[in-house]
Image 1 (cartoon, one colour):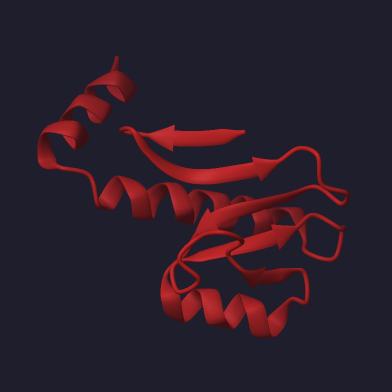
Image 2 (tube, rainbow, N blue to C red; image 1 turned 180 degrees about the vertical axis):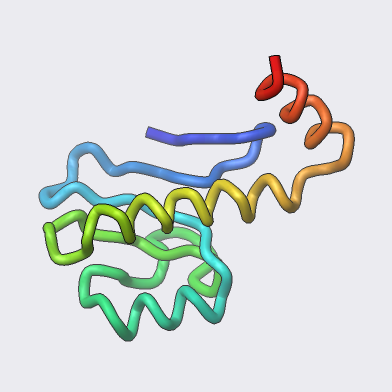
Length: 95
């Protein structure tokens, strides 16, 4: 399952995996930090390993940390959108 904002991916969830896993975009320095801190965070599967992490949802990472990773991924993608797309997104949110 792919999640996009402004036509750009920010999350991919592998529904067939056990445990469930997902790829999330991440700041490169933060990506390395997560990989060192959590065994369940690995370089992004089939993605640019510098900018994407694969997170295995095995219960070893607190839910609030996972939600923050998802939010950060979304924000990184929105930050990279063209100005017109950001304005369109803001209008959708404000309405």
